[in-house]
Length: 449
Image (cartoon, helix red, strand yellow):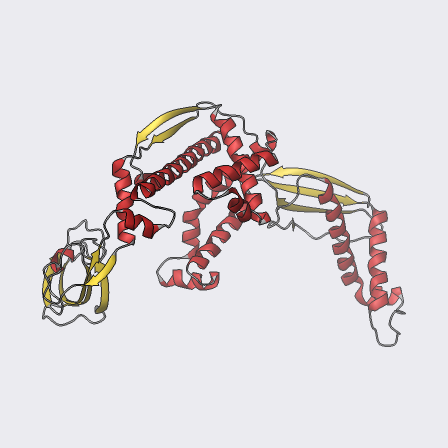
């Protein structure tokens, strides 16, 4: 097909494509459409496949021209998008400002606009400084991890009926609010509410009030909450509550010894074995998290220093993906999630607006990474992937064969290859910028947002 094309760049990584198709090809395309209809259409008074063209044009003239124009335009765009770099994004269909009128005696000209992948040249590295947090793993951090292991392996036992509730016990209560006359406030009753005394994981913060209660005991209490209380519905208010302790359990923590280590994992023979392995895993986890923090800081600064626009359709697709992911987390459909959010007094539009800034930062970071990978032609060899297998096996304490079995899935292996490329990229980039020691922070805080 003989076509001429002109591409004009627009804002927000969009383009306008103007196409002119030679009248010879327009006439040929129209004839092709006429022939197709003539072979298949059924009109009273004519046998199928024997309807004269003049009858078709007289009866369906405008519809035939519109259909022919659609076929010609679709064919032309298909050929053009095979040739040019400015292809539309998968989720951005080209939009035609005005449908052209087909005239077999004239060239056919039309214009479409669509979003394209952003083009960014990452050149400005000036003044970029990345702070590397300092995280030590000593006896204190190791003891905290060991205490969590004891908690996970604790046995929960019923306390005796005459034993009083104490800090750390697991309490089951029924409670309700009372009005000024001592009557139960309708709708405030709660049955079989379970919480750990001292955790503060209860609405009215009644931990201290439950201490010393015994199973079966009921008491009434009055609580006054500060104006700056964390729950705005309770802030500055006084509540009268009725509490009944229906069950009381205690956690029996296991001793920190060789037996516990063997119960946790058969590969451990002694407590010392488990401690060494835990510390090693903590160090691996720490190093990975610090690498993530450094990479994130670097990308944020690169995004700031190398400005470019995002296509609106790309941002919309990302927000839609996040909405669908949220629906999956709530085990519902995106449509039902709309209703759930509306019932809570919010709107989907408001939530998407709130997410937009974070979505744009993430998209720009990914685009910069892809641009740098392409610009620097970063690749990985089979030998480098084998080295990654060995590193993963060492960090996880498993065999290389087990690792390879996991990455036998082509998608999993592709993910590993992409990640290895990115790590090579970050290694290069960190050599171009300044890295300084940041604040000293606890191991647990390393994973807080």
